[in-house]
Image (cartoon, rainbow over the protein chains, first blue to last red):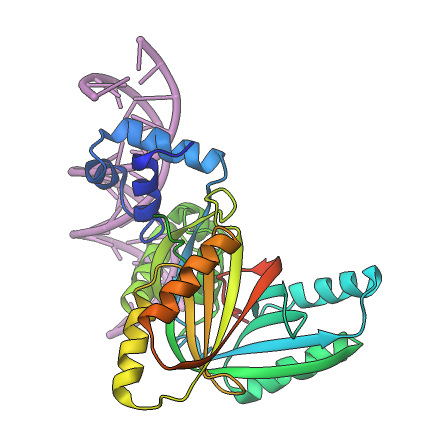
Length: 152
Length: 152
DNA sequence: CCTGAAAGTGGGAGGCC
DNA sequence: GGCCTCCCACTTTCAGG
């Protein structure tokens, strides 16, 4: 389904999608047109989901990354759906996973600072009932955070 | 530093950076040229870090997202630097944070499946010594995972 | 003086064969 | 994979607040 050139193109594009077709074509030893056709195909197949600009947390006053670990007693569908829809709607939430292990859910949350996080936390517990255990831990240091999937 | 139009442009671009200047200009009630100048300025200032293509985990056989929670006894600089450089070099690691709370570090790891994760885990503990406690938890469900920062 | 608008040009994307 | 067309990024110049 994906040959070597496809993977090379994806690898390049997931680091910099502002590269022009010519540059991409040269990098994979192709002429511009077939290169363009491959990329078009990868978009149609859904391998390429979209192209986005990455912004600086610091420059936008969003320096605090927090992880929220949640346990719950509630295991019925209705509660689940309302919980999911509430959390999905909160723009501070960049990641939201149902997980195995000690906790049931994990959130990755981005705010300005502790005060901002406190606001988020209060909003969360106000909007969602039946959260029996909510633990927060904060990123002291953001050592690596990338969007590029490992393609080898 | 950033006015309303800047924020609107950032908001649009962090969802779709393939929009052309004309479309962006219309959306914020500007003509193409000043719109283009603003975006250029935001790039120079480092507010816009880059433009990347987002790829489908599923289509690329990377359906397993795991979180690795790590405690360590080692708190000297040398160990820290070697630990950081080893983990940074592992392409499966999309997120790597030093955290407050019960654990010292947290990793977000993407692999094909449990077998792939096992390979990653073995590689990790082989390359890094002095990990006293390594707990894995797996994402059963990826409910929300976005790259867009909250700009309001 | 700074910020937005108008006009022109070179180049690359996107469709043909 | 080559050709051709059209549109868009980018520059310069001008106008307004």
